[in-house]
Image (cartoon, rainbow, N blue to C red; front, side):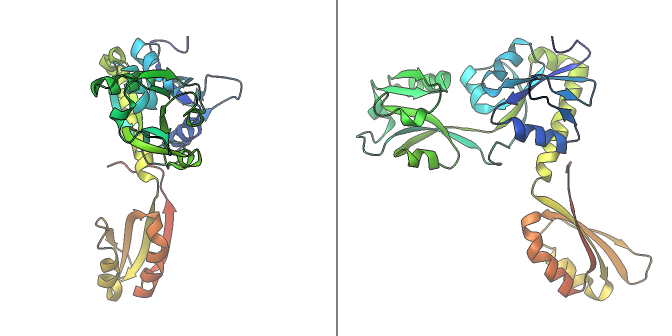
Length: 294
């Protein structure tokens, strides 16, 4: 037992997504204590109890009702064909904010040029359920073996091809493999048990969680800028900000001066600040953002 009916039972992904998930929750405003020897992180919100579960298993436990909600990859939802509510897409991962891809790959020197060439061949993967359904839908008969890891080293000795996860393709290239086809793109999802989703209190709690986590993700890579602008420089300064969302402008107590504030991409700021200064803006302050709620 990790809670009772008055608490939200939340599954956090253990493994490659764990650290990125804990950072995201912190930015969303949750303080979580995690012991190196415990699978039960403690939230500063008494309404939430949590458990660390591998992302590969999360959808099954949420679907069965052992957990009210959890975070896992879209790939593992599809692999288990999970009967859950998809609450929100949260585009983050262990390496950044790009979706990950599951690809069919074969040795560079193999004769296989397209998926149909794998008819009657053996494929190794961790994504067994989805891979079987994918090839069946394409009407290609293959044998799919579960791989416990190091999948990219198995062809051509232990299998003819693999279905493996890649972000940049560097590991595949390092093992002399080439991609035949991308069969799935995946991002992190917040999912909920259907019965929990029907519970008014739990649904509101899950929706609030999704709102704050999404706001924390939107804030990634963005900063706030505020500055004082004299009236004579006002038009020029605003022209520099014209490609962004409309800035907030307010008159200052000193006549002929304005306070201007805007949210923008952090990568633009190093070029923007010198231009603003040259245009006549003063008192320029850059500040980090934790959440941006639309």
